[in-house]
Amino acid sequence: MNDEAVRKSNIIYWSSGIVSICGIIFEVLFGALGSYILGDGVKQYTLTISLFLTGMGIGASLSEKVMKNLILAFVWIEFSVGLIGGFSSFTMFGITAFAPAGTDAFFLYFITVLIGALTGFELPILIRKANDIGVELNRSTARVLFSDYAGGLIGGLLFAFLLRPQFGLVKSAFFVGTINVIIALIVLWLFRKEIKNFMIHAVVGVMILLALMIGIFFGEEAALSFEQRIYKDPIIHMEESAYQKIILTRDYHTDDVRLYLNGGLQLSSADEYRYHEVLVHPAMVYAESPRHVLILGGGDGVAAKEVLKYEDVEKVTLVDLDPAVVDLANTDRHLLELNDGVLKDKKVEVIHTDAFQFLEEEDEIFDVIIVDLPDPNDESLNKLYTWEFYSLVRNHLSPDGAVMIQATSPVFAREVYWTISETIASTGLNVENLHVDVPSFGNWGFVMASRKDIDVSKLEMEVPTRFLTTELLPSLTEFGKDEDKKIRRENGELVELKPNTLIDPHLIGIYENSWENY
Image (cartoon, rainbow, N blue to C red):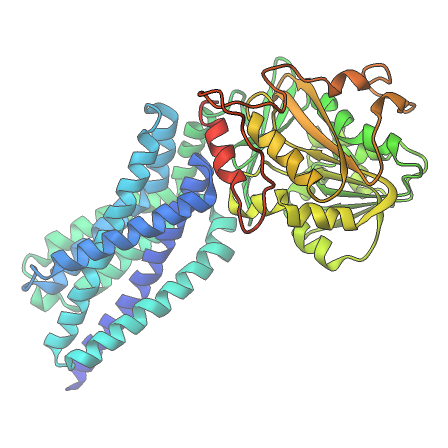
């Protein structure tokens, strides 16, 4: 090959790598969008990856019909990917806010297949163009595919560690879309001698680029107004951490501040005390000497505040995966009013790691263990509701200690609640079931566990509370007919409750079915 052919072939290889980076970013971005808006992260990532690959297959099949004007075809594919992919997140939030239920899922899956098809369409075109330039077919195929796969790795790393935490879902889509269009314009310019009506194509590309750049600077603000419609009250804080989307809202009439993680309500300042007092005090009162307390989750600091009401407490170890939640709890004045700044107390040690991993690696025994983790709505959270996890909890519990575990709603997710209780009991711990009405959540359930028998009627509350009393405690263990353990199918058959395990994570499906109507 002459120097000109080498230069053009190198352009094709570099273009292949860069557009592959963009393609994989769009693929995982769609999975993140589905996880955040539609829930069940594993399901959404599985669907988006499968649909994206299916789209690539369709695109690759259709590409064989393009035999002429290969560069121009590539340029217009990139224009399309940039425009459609760039506006994807922005449009998704708009559809979620304004369109009928289910439209957002249809849009997400459709656009995943479409972007996948466009991505699959472009690779065979680049391979044929490299071959036309003079590169042997086997070499051109190998080099383009190498660029594609290497670009895929880079794209995944960029999204996970840079784009998602720093840019968020909306700005990331616009940014990646601009890269697609810039690559198309560069290729258009370098191959301009081969293209008729070069200026028309260039002007269209520049217009698309300007639209995407406007989206980078102003799209997130507009999307925020869409997202605001999802929440009851005005958003006062929003950030995208490495693990989740964190949102604070505030009702300026009642001064009710609410914390949401990935769209799920975590607490309401109006009634959080009902939840946290039941979560903390029965276990603390039961333990003979609660000197060392472990809190798994609870990054907002409110559970730790309740724990520190006990003078016997010498140390609180709080394990929360996301540093951003703890940082917010330590800096936001609304959360500081709720937690009294206890996360900065010298008795409190905050560790940022996975709760399962912490229990596997830690040797210390705790007098009280408070498990305040999000509901088991995906695989990563499900492992924190398994026999294996609760066995680790048991192994770290002192002989006279107690555990309290938030276990979702026995009314809205009845089978989920009692499956969690059955899983805890299967580790050999004795359990007691409690539930309380929390207006912002509804009727909410907890499972208390210990190596010894539990009789809440013998517990006495001595620390100051706003809701819980000694006399009230026994009533929390009473369940009505529509929320007790005797669950029947429509045909009258009694449901057999089985422990949830890592090998058989059936709790995820039960959870999804239970909450789909709420």
